[in-house]
Image 1 (tube, rainbow, N blue to C red):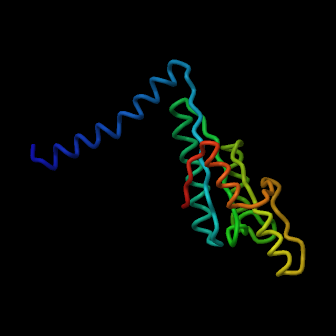
Image 2 (cartoon, rainbow, N blue to C red; image 1 turned 120 degrees about the vertical axis):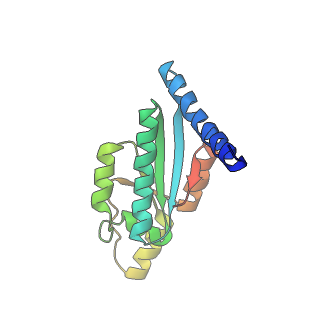
Length: 153
């Protein structure tokens, strides 16, 4: 076997080790909870769908390993459109995801909401699945301080 082949085998072995460890821990009844904070700040349907798909995929992987996932998708700036009842291009996908991952939380930035209301001259409705947080950026900091891992799709 040449040098590249050896490295490929070593890499595959190293990548497989954490999964073996997780299954063994789950079998012993030691259920780990992973924490994930996802940041959406763009009015881009592909980014929004990627955030939802990342959530579903992580949930399914951890569930298969007998582990749990706490996840919050925090939206601010133009990403707040993801959680606006009047402009969200992914409302149906959010409702579908909640059926699979009921514990997923959605944080809607109140600073952004207020700025949009001032600019548009009307109330900005937020979907029922979301909770308004004072400031999206502060919420992301708080989640990271609480041990959440930050992801920006």
